[in-house]
Every structure is written in structure tokens, then in C-alpha cells.
Amino acid sequence: MNNLIQVAVLKGHEKQAWDAKWKKNSSCILSCSGDKSLRMWAPIKQNIPNKLSEEDIKITNQKNLSESVDEQDQMQEETIDNFSWVCLFNLEQSHQRAIRSVSFEPTSSEVFASASFDGSTGIWSKNSSGDYECFTSLEGHENEVKCVSWSPSGQLVATCGRDKSIWIWESMGEYEFECISVLMEHTQDVKALRWHPFEEILVSASYDDTIRIWKENEDDWYCSSILSGHNSTVWSVDFDPTGNYIGEILLYNKINNKYLDFIYIILKLIS
Image (cartoon, rainbow, N blue to C red; front, side, top):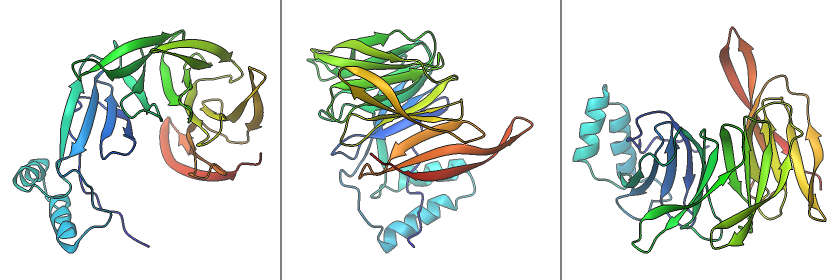
């Protein structure tokens, strides 16, 4: 089995980085943070190698074995290799509170959404000057929005939050969105959302220890399945590229309010 090697550390956020997403058909990464900012990162050399050369491995190992952060930073500045990155832009104060999640619109790599603890979800795109601007703010959650996820068609946006609800928004064009459904079946915070890679099927993970699968039937969204049995929070969930399997991350145990371990479970999706 191939070993994973740390090739870069992207520094700039002043507080915890909550989420990061790859830009479609690009080497860029969009990140969000508790410092209320959005940052886009890109490698200095546009094409990231698919495989490390012996020289790449030597350079990255030297960086990773450096004794101090200052030494690593100095080596990063002195050595411009295949894995040196730069921050393309920093959208400061993008929200009033921490930004928890980001999601690219899948049919347009220049549009993305950001979900914040201020209760809003921003829809961002480039303006006439080529700079990113928030064109729309989706509002309705009572408090923190924990996750935002765009459907594969680009027509639907799902948001979830601390208020135990999931909101599904439909794109009406020209950066206008309409809420078409509010799903209230979770009994605790909803932590994460993911759409099926090809179909309009939504999966949610919650603090209530369950995963729910949501489908549409004649313009009405309903919970088609509840995956229960966990004894702790389900923090994240995702589909494999084929859409046939669901992966989930949950806490294995909790003692004295200290998290001990995480486990990753793969489930077969039966249509």
C-alpha cells in the first residue's frame, strides 16, 4: 500500500479551519474558518503531480522533519517545489460569525456557498470586476448553520443547523432561491449533509446519533430511511463516487467529555 506524505501546510487563517473543498476541474482549494474569512488557495505550479518523484519525497521529508515551525517556514520560502502554495484571495469578515461549511455549485466552478454560525448561507460569485461577491443570503435557520451542500444538478441547495432542521432551497435563476421544504425530524443538531453524486437523494448526520436518507415524492420531501444504532454523535457522512455506499464518521467513545477515538463505517445503499 502506498504511504501518504504531507506535502504542504496552508497557513493564513487566524482561527480553526472548519472546512475545505477542491474547486472542480482545478487545483484550487476553498477554505473557511472561525475567523469569519474565506480563502482560495492554489499551487504556484499549476499542475499538481499525480505521483511524487524521488526529489519531491526528499524535499517534503526534509520539511516535515524540521524541528521547529520557523525552520519549516524558512524552508518553504527558500524552496519553490511542485507543492508550494499561495493564497489567491482572502474574503475577510465574510459573515458576522464563524464560517462552518463551504460547497461549490457543481455545474459552475465560479459559484460557491458558505454556511455560518450567524444563521445565514451566502451565495458567492464573481462580479463584473472579477472579484468574488456575495449576491444572495439564504436566511431562515434560528441559529448556527452547520453545513451547506449543493445537489449534483445545481438546482438544489441543502442547509442544516443547530435548530435541528434541514432546509432545501431551489434555484430560481439570477441568484434567487426559494425554500421548498423544511425537514424537522431530527431531534438534535444536524451536523452534516451530503447529496448523492448523481441523484436528488440527500443524507443527513446528526447529534441524535442517527443518519437519515431523504427523497422527493411529487414535490414533497420525506425521510425514506433512518440508520440508527450508534451510541454517539454522527459527525460526517459522504457517498463513494459510485453512489452505492455511504461512509460515516462517528465518535467511538466519550469519557469525561474527552473524545477518545473516531471510527469510519461504510454502508451499502439499497435503492
